[in-house]
Image (tube, rainbow, N blue to C red; front, side, top):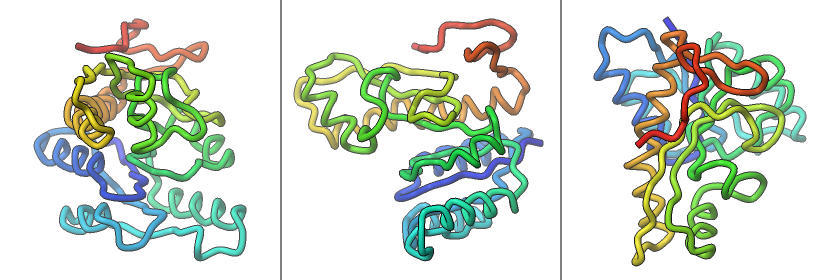
Length: 216
């Protein structure tokens, strides 16, 4: 059984995709051990409660400095003894201490086809605003392992999404979630749970092969 801890910041739509996938796979080998939010009163916490998943808040507002917050966040993650930490719309930089504590055991979902539109400053709606401003025709989502950089860890899965001429950032954001994020994040977790994912020389291998990561 793969125990996962999911870190969230807001509405929790990606968390819901994971919850739905776990519920619809009764014979699966994944258990959500806990949900941790850095914000109080967000919808993601309601989703966890409704699903009967333990949840808690570790907010930087409750600490005197960032170092104390990072220490508390790592302690909260450690308490649930996860095999895998999943960043599902978690809008806080992961401290280096956590990356070192969970090497190749933290994954993130990013709303673009990395290496495009990623790194510092590219998160949430800002990604889709940049996509439209640039005039690209294809965007998408990426699941990747987390390292000490920003969106620089080994890529596990990607899925493209077409950009429509009448898209607004909000419309594009929703379609990327529906057509890509909610599909590839649970799929990546399933592959990891099945022992099909490994990292060698900084690259992800699935079922022993460095397969093409962009899925139609």
